[in-house]
Image 1 (cartoon, protein in one colour):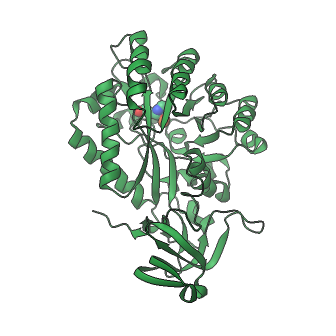
Image 2 (cartoon, helix red, strand yellow):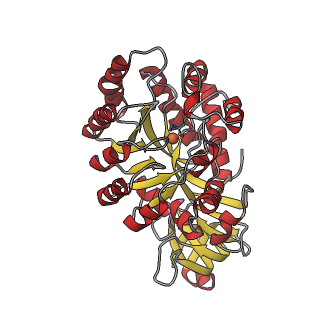
Image 3 (cartoon, helix red, strand yellow):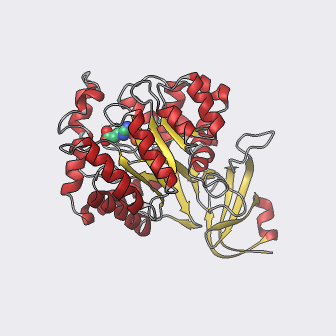
Length: 406
Ligand code: NIG
Ligand code: FE
């Protein structure tokens, strides 16, 4: 008998997200799973559970709802203060996102509000976002800094991420994004020096990944190569904001450095996409940011043809995507871009986990994986993106415990 301290029963369809020949979602009809100390120890047909598992702990009855792995969001910016709702309204009336990035507007404005905030307030704001992620079915996020933009305030952003992970049940994978933009009023060369000589070495113990935004209004290709090259030599894994607003070398740099992810990619060329696929990089697409900036459709066909894995992310941030909802991002990717429900489900689980080096742990359900799953009021996993902009998540389980809102 297998001993468990948590079990979930009566899932009409339980998607393991481990593709089988007969089913890309690897689903079990009338499925059940059992967990011990936060990890899955058994998964199978509900009728076999009692014969194979001894439960000493909580039992969750899915009562015929669907169960899928907790969603994995591979691109978020959750540490910030202030609002840019007025910039959203301006864009609705035709102003371009790019045109909002000069002077003390756009990202610079969020940097000011974030620096002016204290660590307690920033942690409260980020923890509220963490709770909304979990309520909307996300159990793991990649979380970027990038609104501090100096040694002191970037360190504080990493500290906020540490505290949020401790306070909430969300799994938080920190990314250092000091190379978001050059902060207002600072000499470009001096900032790059501080980034490479002070911040990158100082933050290595805390941040798993290093990211840079490679295009105007942020960093040139040469600057991006210098920053990310140094990051790689210090042992960071690499992510790149690339070809979001215009064509450029960002995707090439991601491929050259063997980045774990190249993100946005609206303007990536077919040759760049092939290079990314060859490098083993994951394309992290951000449908909600694309939606509010009215960006073009990313080259999905070229990605499919190159067999480039596509992750779907919320890109939670105050400028282009103030949303913690991956199900909404999945709906948008289906409707706006013609991705299939199966593609977006894999994109918000398996492929996202792969981009975070969490293969086999997050984004799938199997013995040994995190016992992170969601119970969803939908007739099938494929129906999740069909429910547009309403939260159909009934329960979120993280590490074998049902999450309760605080
Ligand atoms: O992913 N592209 C750069 N960064 C964010 C936007 C940040 C902001 O506008 O505050 C993004 O879309
Ligand atoms: Fe981003």
